Image (cartoon, rainbow, N blue to C red; front, side, top):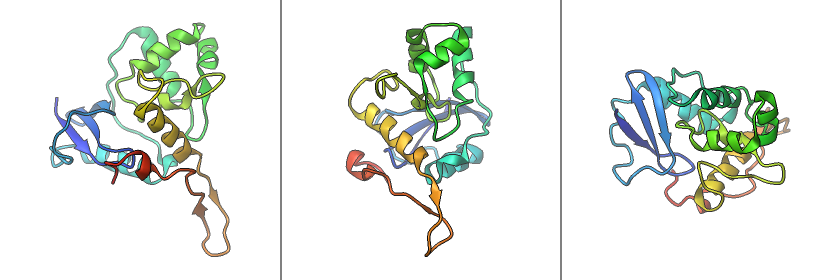
Length: 179
């Protein structure tokens, strides 16, 4: 399957697809050309990712193939129902599915398309929890950035009709490879 590396505010991410269908998002892609293969990536994938990083409420409506167990599929379907700007705990999703919080966490960890299937919107009852298999470091900073990005709400302003509140931290300081 082809992979394209694209630049984002959280650094380069790898995008995998088959035909017009998204099959994976890699938050830690191998080093390579930052725009390698971009000419062949389906335009809908590129456009929707760009729209999301511009304004998180844009959401995703992409054909996507998620390979996993029946339980993982159920968890991932539940994740896609969480609106941008909202979070759920592992326990809340577990109760919804009649499962255990740890099992939900494992399904989130196995998610092949983070961001598009928003596992970053699932948090621990007492904090952020993990993200893509990590409980500290860069991936947790990515989770924090994504949640901050999605929490920005338009507000009425005397200068312009709508303006976004600034992020609490400069993402470029966290992610030196960011655009």
